[in-house]
Length: 419
Image (cartoon, rainbow, N blue to C red; front, side):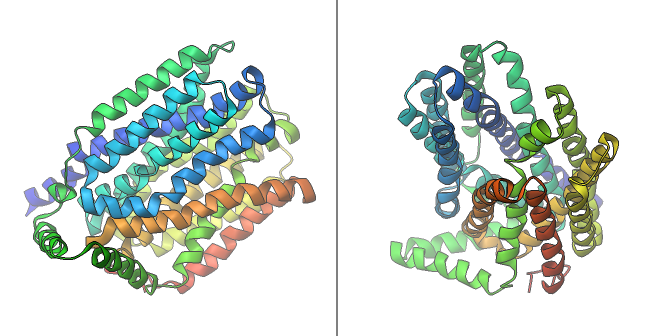
């Protein structure tokens, strides 16, 4: 029994999981470098684009990514990981080449939309594959590892690419990103063809039976089956869906105004702002895996409560802090809060998903969460313009308070589904 437990733990770092994590890290590195560092400045200074054009260019990526997440989940269950992910990363590869070689705004927008379409399979594939390997007892731990790979890529990309851009040397930067996408394509080729190759033995038998039954069904019947599965999951807890939207909405509110607040209100230098981000991001990354293990051992609820309380307090107090020392403390508290929230929240979501329909339902759930990341920045900008810099932070903090209340009404059993 002991060797079986050790073998199961080692599956969390099997070649399949490591391949998914490498793809996650490198793709997010490329996206972070492009969307946060290169494109806004490159389009403004080199191509002479207006802020309106730049905004639409960046929005095209998020919209393309979110629109395809639900159908991508269905495709994962149908075709497996290699075909789905390889198609996506090839599209993203082409998009990076297009962005690097064009100087016309319309092709920039098309390139970013293509990047969104190409990266749409990323989260459904990675989450479906890793949680399938981890099983019920390890889902919070594996989600912590996934988010650590994501945060590391997102955070390192915008910083590292600055060393290659230098004094407007965008050609070297684009070459690096094309090289990164080449690596991603090669890793995607190593993924298993069908996801039942990484399933547990009991799940293998169940899924083979499902596949066999699908073979005799018409396309419309199969689509109807998937839609029915999504509908049945919606009856698990009606509050789960507005809560999923609110969780990413609160984060989306912060995305466009953090830099604005640091530069215009706090008057931070680039170095100070980097330290500002590291204070929160590094704390989150450091605490993610330990928190994931504690969630798996102790349960979801306590960590949700503490995480939402810490995050809400930090956000509500943030713009009223008068000293830099207190600001750094609040940023660190916010980082700890998210380290509590990320593994426990995703373990909650994973508990609501039927094992045999992970791809389709994860894709649907991620679409709902993606809407929060699209709408949040729009609301944030309006709040900033109309009510001032306090408003977005207060709104994000109040949403965290709302989530603290909502999760109290979502039953979280130790095992099984969320009711």
